[in-house]
Length: 360
Ligand code: CP3
Image (cartoon, rainbow, N blue to C red; front, side, top):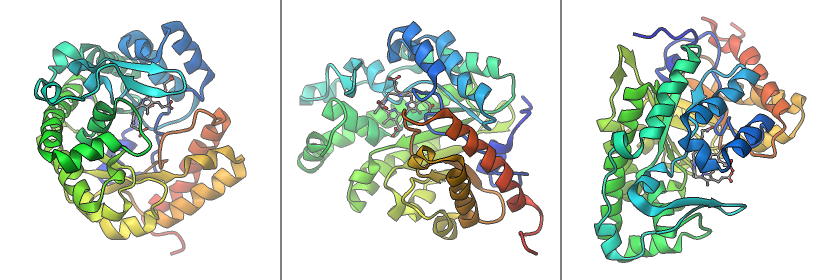
């Protein structure tokens, strides 16, 4: 059993007492850090960076040497799975991710297979193991994957989309085909996350970035049902430690009770949600992660502090909150803003974790 020097994140995810509110930041290793851009330039491309465990380890650790973050997150991408399925992932400048061979024809969908993580995603598992060694138990390492639905969005559209026309056309015309894709993705994500846990990930997160584009009924059938299957099949313990999981559906604020009921340990919130109201709705069942508007980081340290205070006040006293942004940190963020954020969360949150509520 490994003993973490700082297990505040794990404890908060399991709603156990902590002395302050832990914080990590979605996309904490990214283009807002000059040292990231240097390593990425050395690698050549973003994908080369992901595929090189030495360099992936280096960039995973970069934000931790600048800021007192309470977790590391594996440096990789959600689209490694469809890439391993042979769809040919590439990134064109300014356009985001694209696939050379998106799913267009029924036969392409029928030919989809579940990649074996040990074989097709070895480079990710190697990175996980190497990052764990480099962290030497300072803070936990979070592993992650995209949700089956969010992966299907990219696989069917061939990249990002403004209206998800191809995806939604399939959803309403050929729901059977979409379900086939989702079933394969579901099995692929389950195997991938369990392999990350075996390799050393100490918490795991499902990113459902596009679930919020669906109707409530479609969300339930095409996104949530598959995440529920994954959660039920995830390893909950490894090497004698609990492995908590987090589910983040961007735009899922209206459906929090249903998300909380799939058996996950924590629910990620985007910034449109009032975290106090969310706690009243689901805080007895799960921990909450979030949810500062990433744009707050374009303001000065004083405003950041004020916004942190308001968010901590809204959550209130006690454990079960992991501070984060409501979505990934923008590449235009000054690194000093992230420093101010981490400092404010650590300092201002202490009084919410004393045995008596503040003011009593
Ligand atoms: O949070 C972290 O620090 C861990 C690494 C991580 C990345 N992507 C690195 C990355 C994680 C967890 C992701 C998840 C991811 N990737 C999601 C889900 C979260 C979300 O943003 O909704 C999605 C939808 C993707 C797909 C993806 N990858 C997109 C849309 C893009 C382009 C985004 C952009 O800002 O241009 C990427 C590229 C990407 N993934 C970058 C990073 C650091 C930028 C790559 C670069 O160096 O150019």
